[in-house]
Length: 197
Image (cartoon, rainbow, N blue to C red; front, side):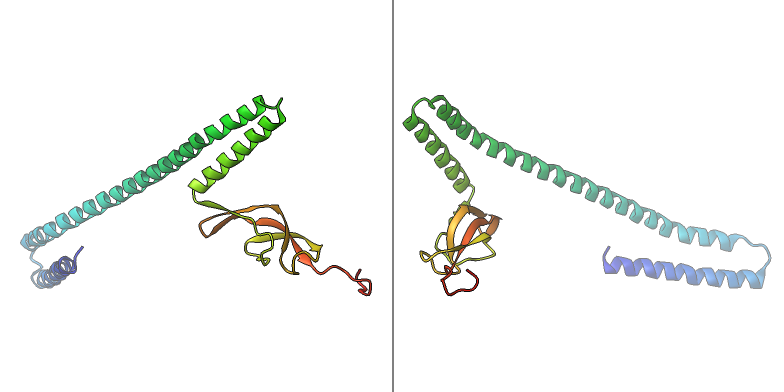
């Protein structure tokens, strides 16, 4: 509702209250049972009541429209999520086909390995098509935001504080971490003089 319309309604309401008060004062002074003053009050309030009823009706309609809009957007959102799941599943079917071919070729060691490598490549390509990248942090500085340390590994091959071994690669979607890489962190090997050895 605009401010001008609100001001108009407030002015009408105030005017009807002033007339009401004047009418009561006149009724008290005259008190001769004349009901013409009551009729004029009713006719003055009727337009306000009609306008109030119209405004209530508009409010109820807008509330119903908002409820319908919310319901539609929820249905559309769930429909989009379902379509996304279907698309992912459809893209996984070729990977399942590759698995079946690899199992069928298990009598030949070379064919079996080749089939499994084909499956691995298909899965990696599928993940890359969705924007998923692998985290293979071997030799990188340990980052607790990207890596999950499961042990410290005494070694001279990698400087202390760096990733010495990767047990499970990590994955991320853009900048969002989907799974941290499970790693062993290098530490200096114990020496004979080291009391902790």
